[in-house]
Image (cartoon, rainbow, N blue to C red; front, side, top):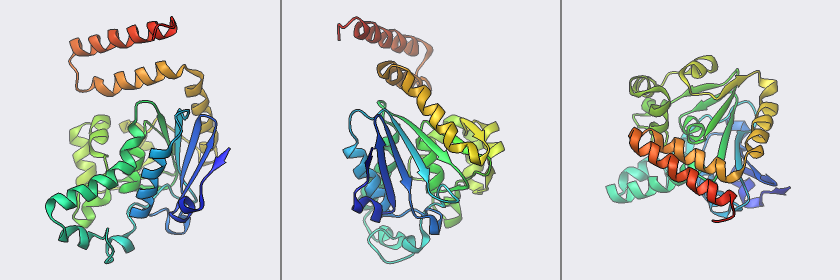
Length: 259
């Protein structure tokens, strides 16, 4: 197993790899894994350095919570990434800065990876969006989701709005975002936000079993299936049928050693 460098740890992120499985852990338990731009920069670094043999990425939070969202002490401070500083930038510069923040989240949608969020306790704002960017969300029964950006007069901007809308529909997504209310695990499960909900002491074992099931399937087939399903929402039936034909042709040729 390989483990994180010191710089990764100091940024509040732990990284480890065991064969084709990488684990990324938010590691600021004293502040419920509240997120900072330094953490996002390190998540981006991990995505760029991720070895090509990694097939599954597990995202976790150390301690009682997955993530309490944006660290307000940073957001309300005077640093380069504070809300006040972002407001002082030109619209183009501000958008570019936010695009860099988004990169820390959106790589989890990469077609070659299956990404799993193991969520316990609070997943608020940026924490909720981090989980949404993962392909699957395994929730402990004490998990709580909240899209709380509205309470700061802000909007969700870390890649979570499209996935949320796809999962629960536009009306429910709007209600979740504009109220900022807490969604307990059982409601998240009913709405389709959870892959499964398990007792807290079964969270790690459930994630291990799910990871093993993913790894038991051929990598090429898994990547094609993920791409097919990701595009299905916006394709017509005819276009989706065509995408299936093309994907199957690639799989047949690969299995025959012709690719």
